Amino acid sequence: MPINPDAAGSVGPENEISWTSKDSLLYALGIGAGATDPTGFELEFTTENTMGTDGSVTEQKAFPTMGVVLGGGGGVSFGDFNPAMLLHGEQSITLHQTISPAGSAVGQGKVVAVYDKGKAALVVNETNVRDHDGNPLWTARSGLFISGEGGWGGDRGPGADWALPEREADDVLGFDTRTDQALLYRLNGDRNPLHSDPSFAALAGFDTPILHGLCTYGISGRALLHAQCGSDPDRFGSMSARFRSPVLPGERLDVHMWADGDRTLFQTRVGERVVIDAGVFTNR
Image 1: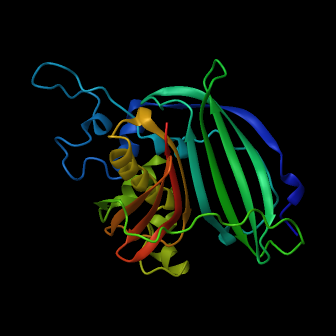
Image 2 (image 1 turned 90 degrees about the vertical axis):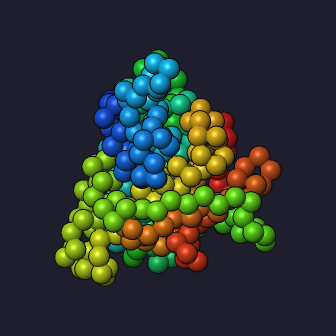
């Protein structure tokens, strides 16, 4: 069996990462910022040189979910497998500090766990990013389902502890995606032709290229930022979710939110179709 369950606990090398003001602007546009009102709403995320009528300059900010695309966690092997069998199933990010619109840091990857799901393996990877003084900046964790790699009799992992509240959402905030949203988002680094090449998408069983899952995740985080944090990145704590269904560029994403003690539960839907499930958000 190519997947190596003993890879759990493996830690990769430290990697220097850096990002610029332009990277933050591209990420903001990639998750749809500015599309609703390009000269007003979200200017702090989409511009770096906007001046108000009083002469004050709008300070550029970065979206908190940008950490999931900045990298820094490579170099950890958990075996060989057919990459066509890999599905990005889960994603989370925890902010220890606010991500600046430009900067540099040190990232290190770790294989947290390798679970046996029977017909598939679930590999949980984690990237911890710190500043150059050793202070933690953010932690990103992804769950990768690899079909055909389970069945060795290993630990199945923890059960689901998320349940859809039995009431209407306390808040719903949605955004329309652009028909070229995937072409914009791919400029953040994910050039997988599944999101741009119609012939490649057809081989994967889709009539047209689909939106990146992490783009849907970022748009969901954008809605949570505005609805739960008053648009202030300093208040964004953590966000975890599971990917349920692909999104086509041009579809509208509505994020349904429920207050649940000191956290917010959420689902992202296209109409009645759930595309992101089991969402949990916390403020910082």
